[in-house]
Amino acid sequence: MKGRVLIIDDEAEIRRNLTVGLTQEDYSAVACPDGISAIHELNSAKEKGIMYDYLVTDIFMPDIDGLKILKVIKIQHPDLPVLVITGFGDESLKLTALSEHNTGYLDKPFEIPDLVKALEELAPGSTEAGAVDEALGEVSIRESVSTYITIKITDPDKSMQIYNDLYQMEGVQRCEAVRGDFDIIILAQAGSQGEIKTLNDKIASMDGVEVVSMSQIERPKLDRDVDEFIKIYSGAVKAQKQTTPAKQPGTTSYIIVDIEKGAMQQIFTTVFFIDEVIFCDVIEDGTKLVGMVTGQGAVGRTPRIIEKLGEIDGVLRVREATVIKLVEE
Image 1: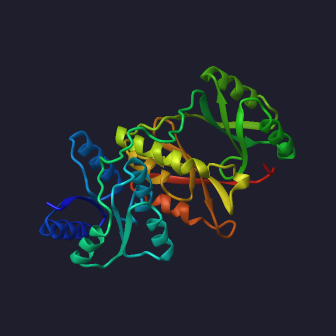
Image 2: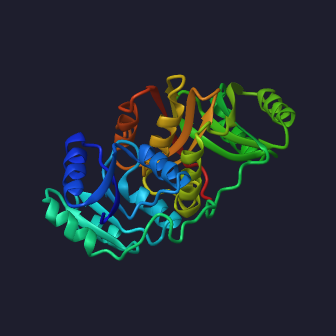
Image 3: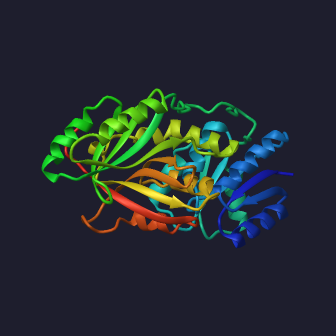
């Protein structure tokens, strides 16, 4: 046998053709329809002591695109030969893929001999060689209690004073004026839920202020494999993007995503890996996500990212609150 190949592609016909074709060429092939199932397969194989000698991945998939999978796989298994395949690539995507160690690139459509040739041009390696067991750059779990508080201003004449008072209040880590169902969103952090309640009561007692909601941030309930993958990606890539709205290009918005009960892992993972999403938090017992997104386009026009979120299976509603930049940070 020439080697074990893991294939990731969301098109069933392509998975079938590649699996059959590689088997006829004396390879052993396993195919997965998306990134999450591939993550599970890699970890399951590792636990069974089974190594993969090649990874073949499409770029555009419904949950995690192939370039993001490639980034994490190369941290976990730096010497694993990876072949990126796509029918919608361009020179930029090709250069990004080829910048990773021991990675090849093949445009669709192609024949099985082309695939075999591309695999043979890569240096030998496997999922065992140089494997990293710890999540590199793992993001530390919040020790404090973190809560989102949304506010309506009932006295518009006091808007700026209210904003300034909230912005400087102890325990307020982030304070943004927004245009949407509420006027201000706060990220509060404290050592206990009691301290958060005290802060909330202080805000509620202010003249011209109505507290709309208070929702504690919860740790996403993800299975072990997905949780580890996200931690590694966060440390390597995502954390670099979590800057303040004032430093983001284009428009910046908070999003509140209502989701079906039980669909949190799939939706959280899908939303987390969307490029325009800066960060994503879980609230209200896994039935809502709060995140920040960036976008380009005319003011007042629904950003494509909002439409994209609404098309995800299990998403019930997406609300947007556009950030109004009152201060430069």
